[in-house]
Amino acid sequence: MHRATLVALCIVSLALAGQCQDFDIGGTLGASFKDLALLPTRLTYYNQHEDAAIASYTCCKVRQEKEIQAAIIANAAFLNRFAETAYADDTYMHYAYVSSFKPESFRNEEWGYRMLVQEFPDSSLADDAAWKLGKLYRKDYDHESAIKVFEYLVEKWPDSTWADDALIQLLQEYAHVEDEQAALDTLNQLAYDYPKSEFCPQALDTLAKKYMEFEDYDSAINASNDLIRDFRYSDLADNAQLRIAECERLRGDLRASLEAYDLLIDEWYGSDLTNRAMREANNLIVRIRQTWAGIHRELYDPLAWNPAKEAKELWYGGAKHYQNNGLHAEAVEKFREFIDKFPGNDLWDNAWYEIGQTYLRQDFLFQEVNKADGPEDLDRLREDYIASTGDEGAIPTDGSLSALLDATEAFAHIANNLKGSSLQCAALGMVGRCFTPYGDIDTGPVTPDAAATHQ
Image (cartoon, rainbow, N blue to C red):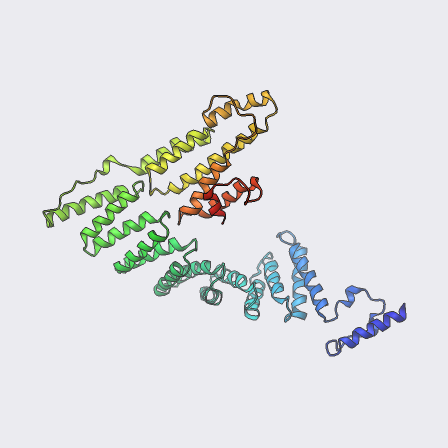
């Protein structure tokens, strides 16, 4: 056995000739495999990386001081020996991450992320490291370095999930260093190069405001129109329409301004800005009459319509009150009334979302009814069932009660149709939750609208 071991080790030493210069073959007799893992082969650096990774994954709490230190040492040891191997990028990331749990860790974190970005720019982790590095510089008030890193991130990885976030960070940095032109360019880039970003509506809104401040009314109107066209159900759409009217007025086109105010009043009738638009429109009507005597039309009556107050009363005093008290059918009716009565209100898309949530609450009750074990259980649930449905008749006992399809339709309507709503992602998630009880999406009893959302 001893002879066989010597032969095997001689074969290993020949295979590694040129790579293992100072390794003492005689010192391996009786050594464990762990000791032999120091051999510079792919197997050894794979194993050492695995040890460092395991150490990193087992110390994610500040109080684990010993584990954190052990993980830092393990990652540093790997980087000291194998900094140019295939696993070094991962180890740099682990080293920086684990270091963040130690006090005064800036230098170690910064080194880990910076080395990953510099040495492995083609790594799948490089954009993540650049994002964390930029945030680290921001936290340290190193604005110049933060700007350089975020600019590099957007330029090097324009399709990164962090690209639009980096542009937002750049906006804040440019504002700090008072670089107006760079901020304007960044807003343009965010607004038009990342139309699917959650930050795009805000970017277009801010861009339009900036152009308006610079008295570039054409550009302000264009940005506002783009916001309305692409994000019609954003909470900022009515603000954009008001801005268009104001820009037209400021550049002296009173008729175009009046038309813009009229459009706001007609299409965003439930907006909190409606009363203001009515008053401004009335002022313009009077001015236009004085200039063109042939203009005849009625003035608006702002006192007759106060959507801000009435919407709040219907929302909190009606719909939400019924929902919180388990009167689900009545709550849905009030939310639908809100939708019909207050288009353009900032809570308009929320009403659709709350309809879905109300149906989910009702479905929870229905499942309790479906599982009822005998008449006594049904009697216990009868009062809640009547409150939820308004139906005082016999409670169905065939286990078929469900409100999931109704909930799915409400959430799917947001996800499919309310482009620009801040609730689209949340609604899509709720659609997935509603699908869960059905199993296979291809065979589940889902509505066409919901199926479109899934696709």
